[in-house]
Image (cartoon, rainbow, N blue to C red; front, side):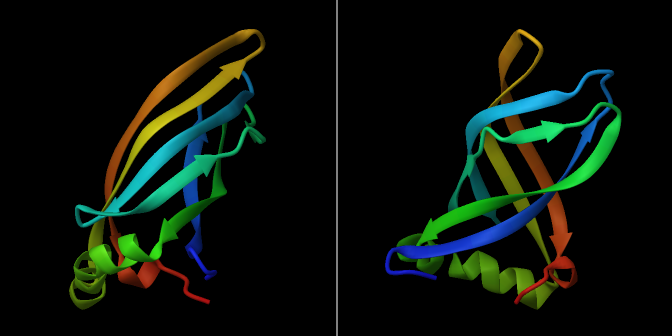
Length: 119
């Protein structure tokens, strides 16, 4: 936490089934928990997804105190019900060799509160 808000590290499983290494060239994602906007992720341009692999990649969610306060009902529900719907939406830029493209991201997944690692 800092004067303007908090940064949270999020691990995301990414699968690259392609025969080529994919390089992520940046992007902007919005994160919602139980339909409450909790913050944004600035996707760095330093991620490489090796060919035919799946791995966990860590990104940093940046939020401000207003979003934390506004999302408290959704966050509390996650812990009382032991699960929450996480929705990540936005765009990333990626490519292989000389081909680059912007991809829309729109992923919804239920996660359990037990899967969170708080430290």
